[in-house]
Image 1 (tube, one colour):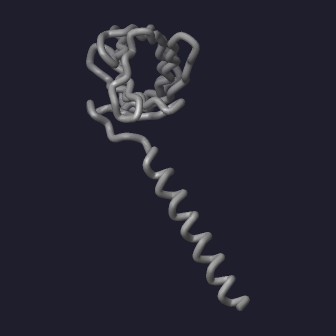
Image 2 (cartoon, rainbow, N blue to C red):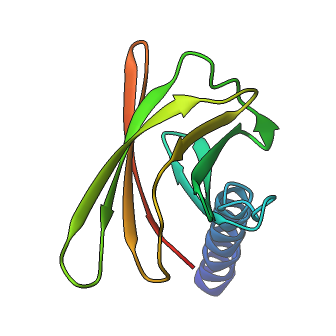
Length: 128
């Protein structure tokens, strides 16, 4: 009888762990849609895309475009040689925030501070 209970408990525990693992797997970081770097914060997904003339951050909520019309932000770029650059992020239509006038290099670390009424988030990226 004791052996049967042990088997039941181990089986039930394994089932619970498997179900918990599947639910965590469903909320992983999404694949990039625009060739950028993807990070998530506060259940919102941000895709950072470096452009020759600046950068764009695309905003998604559960794989759907999230309107960024009330968002503002700031990019802080930490260069590998130790210098620091800053630029404002502005709404640029749909789910995009963008900045111009920055030339980014591979390996630069970017910290985006993004705000909307009642909420602020800090997201970190590394330029590919």
